[in-house]
Amino acid sequence: MSEQPRRPRKPYRRPQKDPVRLLAFEALRAVDERDAYANLVLPPLLRKAREKEGPEKFDARDAALATELVYGTLRRQGTYDAVIADCVDRPLREVDPPVLDVLSLGVHQLLGTRIPTHAAVSASVELARVVLGDGRAKFVNAVLRKVARDDLDGWLARVAPPYDEDPEDHLAVVHSHPRWVVSALWDSLGGGRAGIEELLAADNERPEVTLVARPGRATRDELLGEEAAVPGRWSPYAVRLSEGGEPGAVEAVREGRAGVQDEGSQLVALALADAPLDGPDRRWLDGCAGPGGKAALLGALAAERGAFLLASEKQPHRAGLVAKALAGNPGPYQVIAADGTRPPWRPGSFDRVLVDVPCTGLGALRRRPEARWRRRPEDLDGFAPLQRGLLREALEAVRVGGVVAYATCSPHLAETRAVVADVLKRRPGAELLDARPLLPGVPALGEGPDVQLWPHVHGTDAMYLALVRRTS
Image 1 (cartoon, one colour):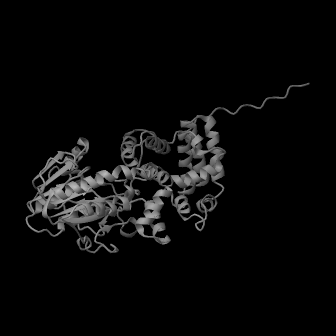
Image 2: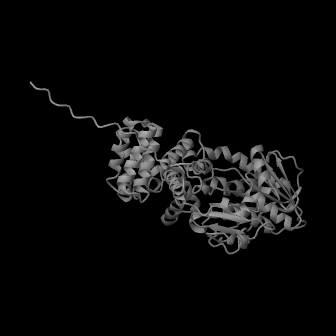
């Protein structure tokens, strides 16, 4: 019996390294393994890639694609998990996290970008070969080929429960938010399907970069002279950079005369600065000043009036960031590391006080998409005593006739109105002011007296503001 000739083996081909996808994978691993934030991890990775010589050196298009892959994957993680779960024969928790990251990057390319199907699959499989090995790359290939059989709408129809049967779970899958976050945001909006759909969709949009021209140090006209710059919508000091605008390329930003600051954050500082006072206006306090954006704007506004700003931050390293943001401020100021719930200053020392309290950050999910997957409902219980304590001490710090601004970057009712109502109920001698007239030109501010801004309505982070005057 003659021996059958063996088929010649295909020569082994080394996997092709794709620097863009490798960088995106590295960023996702840092977010997952170290609880890092993408907005802190990605810039140094991109900077290092740009500095490389040879074929792995990044250009602007590479950086833009890497950024889209990282942020797009994080924003749509909940949706993509549901799709991947439908394509594998085991619970997702049994899929190794690095494998899941490669799969999620691949699914985003298939369902969330215009990258051609064959290119999305082949590039993801090559990435898997490089970072996972050939064996697991075959698994990635099999899963992504299943995903590629349909588009995003087709997958959503398959994996999301019908709205009529479970509205919150439907919205959670379609718009990639945890169910409890959907529920909380819906409560804050006050009901209605259209509003919550618009808000959740806005959370998944890439936010514009907004600059602030710090009064007395830079002008908006100066910033508008930059390429891709257009005026802000509401703040007289705001300038928006269209897609591709790089803040680090702006001379005023490099010199500290301007900064990156969401327009909602600017409006909070401006409202406090413009709130009517009874009596002198010489001493201002930012009681939770880190990382320094509001403090820098308040310091510039205070300087124009000859007022002194004390910027206090509990964490010393964040106090250092505040000092850096305020460096060069034309008026008198001081930065200290202090606990606002156990303050070193005397009661009644200040005319204006800002407490932008630590919170869940649910109002900034556009900028920190991974936060939605890290936060838990029980986190609210951890923040509640701190938020109440900071507001109580702020009301002690301000003199009679002075004003306190309570602010959060969260629209959750437990962090906004519930805190203010609880503190005021227990502390006589304080009254709410109507904050709406202090945001001139800004529409849809509700019934007042407090203000809730929204990404889908105002194009800002979901900042909350309540102004309180001490009356006795």
